[in-house]
Image 1 (cartoon, rainbow, N blue to C red):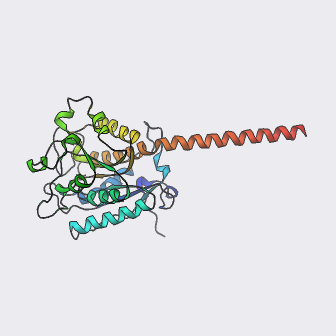
Image 2: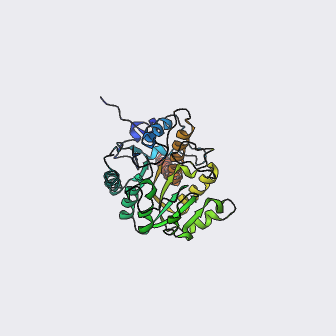
Image 3: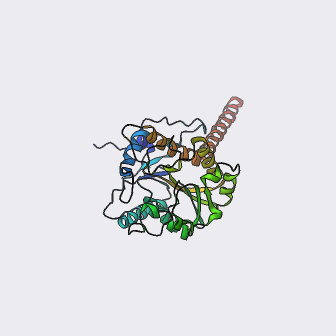
Length: 314
C-alpha cells in the first residue's frame, strides 16, 4: 500500500485534500532562467528541508499544520513556457474553486504568471505584492512573454501591483512601472515608513509572490540571480506579518530557490519562510478555535454541574 507523502512529514489525518484548508502546489520548472540553473530542483529541496523543521511556531504560539496542508502532485509540465503557465493556471483555479487557501512553491518566477492570473479571475480588486530584487516587467524576453523576466508584466496590466525590494532592472521596465507603488531597496534602507506606505498602497485583497532573491545573499545565497543589498529575516517577517494582519491574503507563492548541494541553509530558510507565512495567515483562527473549544468545555461543565445539582436535590 502506498504511503501518503505529506508536507513536513505531518500526520496523514492533517494532509488529505478534503480535510485540509491549505493546498501546496510544487512546480518544478526552470525553462527560461538565464544565469544560475537549478530552480526545477527547488521543490524537492524545499520539501526535504521542511521534513527537518519544527512544527511549533514560537512567535504565534501555534501549530498551523493542524489546519491541514494538502501536498498536491508536483507540476512538471516543461514542453514550453506557454504550456507550463496554462497548467499552473488551470490547477490553481480548480483548487481556489474548492475553497482552499492555495500556495505554490517554484520553480522559476514565471510559474507565478498562471497563478496570479487564476487569483485575479477569482478575486475582485486584487493587489499582487511582489517581494523581489528584480522588476520582472519586460513585455517579452528572448522570444517569450512567459519568460521569468516577464513574470509581473501581466499582473502590472491587470491588477494593483505593489513592488517591494527592487534593486535590479532594465531601463525599459521603468516605462511600465507605477512608481507610486514601487519601493526600491536603496530608498527603503533610509525610510522608516516604507512598510506603512506599501501597505497603504494595497487593496483589501492581496496575493503575495515572493522571489527569494529579494533577501540579501548573506542569508539567501542559493538563488539563480542574487543581488546585494536585500532584505533581512526579521524585517521581512515584520512586513509579512503586517500584511497578513491588515489585509485579506488569499494566497501566495515562493520562487527562485536554486539549491546548492553544499549549502542547505537556503533550503531551510525557504521552508521556514513558507511555514511562517501560513502561521501568520491562520494563527488568529487557531485562537478563535481554541476559544470556541474552551467555551464548549465551559458550557459542558456548567450543564454537568446543573445536572448533578438536580440529582442531589432529588
